[in-house]
Structures are given as C-alpha cells and as structure tokens.
Length: 225
Ligand code: ADP
Ligand code: MG
Image (spheres, rainbow, N blue to C red):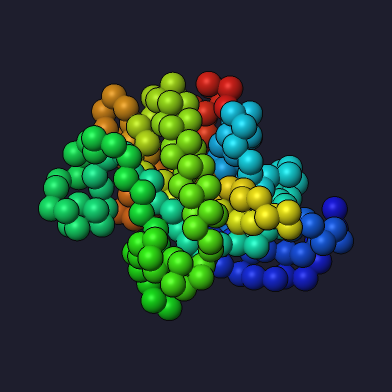
C-alpha cells in the first residue's frame, strides 16, 4: 500500500490517500499516537469479531493504519453509562452517578462552532444523514457500547462514556470509523475508580502515556488484540 497525498490534518491524526481509491492511511500524531493506534485497532478487531462493521483494514506500522475510505457523517455520537464531564453540569448530578440506561448524545462535528450538542431534528433539518441512517447509527452505537462495556470490565476497566463516529461505504452501509481510544473515552479503574482515559489527559499530562499503556496491557491480557 503506497501512501500518497495528505488529504486532511486533524487534531490527532493525518489522513493520506493511497494508490487504492477505496483505502486511506491514517497516521496518529502526538506522543500518545502509537498507543492510541494500537488500542483503537485492538478495540475495532474485537468489535469486528462480534459482528460490528468497522473501517479497519490492517495496522501498517506503530502509528499508521490502513482503513476503508468512507463518507464521514459529520456527527459525534456520545454514549454515556455514568454521569461525567458536560453532562454533570447539564443535569446537575455529580460525576460518577450511574445512569439507569445508556444515554446517547449527538454533537455536530463543526469545530468552528465548538461541536455543539444537537438533537435528531437538527440532524434531519441540516441533512447530515437520513432518518434510516440515524436509526442504524443508534442501533450500532448501543451495541458497541454494550460489547465494549462487557469486554472492558473483564480487563478491570469501567466504561464511563465514549465518542463514536460513523461513515458510509459506497454501497450505502454504515460502518464505525475514526478511532476508539483513551483520548475519546472515559475509562476508570473498576476497583479503585482511578481515571485511566481522557480525564487524566485533561487534568495531568505527566502520567498519560503510562496510563494509556496500562489500558493496552490490560486489553492484551484479556486477548483483545
Ligand atoms: P478531527 O480533529 O477533525 O477530529 P482527527 O485528528 O481525528 O480529526 O483526524 C481524523 C479525520 O479523519 C477526522 O476528520 C475523521 O472524521 C476522518 N476519518 C476517520 N476515519 C475515516 C475514514 N475511514 N474515511 C474517511 N475519513 C475518516
Ligand atoms: Mg478526531
């Protein structure tokens, strides 16, 4: 697979065209890039084994992965199991409060607007995707959350919330794309409540990579890679 033009540079990744028009190469950027690449691929492989369609083709190097090129749906799908972050101030409940059922939120992927929270009516009015596509996205998001929650618990990790992005293949089917990593999810130690994922990164950069590596080690221990 031959890496060609840089198509897009985001906050955490660079996206390259390849000699195959149906494939892209994603290159993770910063110090956490390599471990995020490994974790995201391990998680996607695990989801594939459970029958969830993803964009993953194969890991190419420490920081690079070959993925199926999709038309991204400009939504961030947040799935929450426990109150944390912005939801805590939104509903006035302390961080760590368990939710009776998973909560799904949509954010409009528009960096200039600060990725605002929107609802289904905005999605359709803005023609971000069709109602059928959004139904499929909801279904996949809840299923991914259920599988991830169960598997992570086997590794002693509590899934508080995670951010998902989906895309559309040329045949119209929806697949999980982008990344699932500690940068995009809140992961707490199931025993001690110690923060292992993105809240650690946001509050204290020093031990971030160690904590991320620990997540990867635990996933490997439950043969999730
Ligand atoms: P951002 O700062 O916009 O979140 P990232 O640093 O995460 O960007 O870079 C990844 C970019 O590539 C994102 O815009 C994401 O939507 C896009 N992307 C992820 N997976 C795919 C894919 N399979 N096909 C096309 N684009 C993708
Ligand atoms: Mg991103």
